[in-house]
Amino acid sequence: MIRVIAIDGPAASGKSSTAGLVAERLGWAHLDSGALYRALTLAALDNLGERGAGSGEPWPAQRIIGLADELPVRLVRVGQVFRPEVAGVDVEQAIRGDRVTKLVSAVAAIPDIRTWVNTRQRQAVEGLGVGGGGGGVVVDGRDIGTVVFPEAPLKIFLTATPDERARRRLSQRGEAVDGDVVRRESQALAARDAADSKRRIAPLKPASDAVLLDTTALTLAQQVTRVVELARGLFPG
Ligand code: CDP
Ligand code: CDP
Image (cartoon, rainbow, N blue to C red; front, side, top):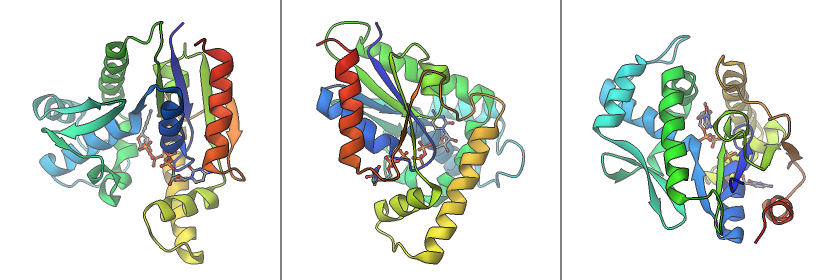
């Protein structure tokens, strides 16, 4: 049995925080697949020139992929966590900025880009040797349970209301959480969710066998405990 927990859900629903803490509690590794899409977007913005997302592809797929192989863009394992790197530089902070966030859904909608990312993710997980034995990996994203690891024995789909997610994202960034700002952030998250849900390939949606977890009224600790309990019931030792 492959020892993978897939955590999917819309933007700022708590996927990465939950996945990271669940992994810590289980002594497993954590891979944030969104970080790779973000790192590719950052690399393209810095090297191929600013391009508005518009309605089509911001840059031709082959230019982004060529650049990603050349720089390279990759996931590097540091302890139990995979960190995104561009040209040897850790970009975990740089990929969270507005410039990347505005464009990342358009980049992630390109089929060849998804193939490139999925190959890297599977290689990273294979390198851990999680087919049996002790450890495992918690992977979070949008299509982990549906496309990347459909054989994962535990799939979680996290949700929360758009306003709650907007408040979480603002406090995470250390910004004020008041009326107008929440409304604007909530609209930006909803626009990204819509783009991610409507794309032709690997749209954001729960796998048919995913456990749906509405976290609107939960604390982070509560949702982590819930996932850890489910994992302990499913994965031996
Ligand atoms: O953290 P947040 O929810 O804001 O986003 P993320 O997980 O960093 O993902 C950024 C973007 O990458 C998403 O809006 C999706 O367009 C894309 N993504 C995806 O298409 N598939 C994944 N498995 C993960 C991310
Ligand atoms: O990865 P994703 O975009 O889905 O969300 P995240 O970056 O893990 O979480 C966004 C913020 O919500 C983080 O600061 C979490 O600590 C916070 N949060 C949460 O995930 N769950 C709660 N029940 C409450 C807050």
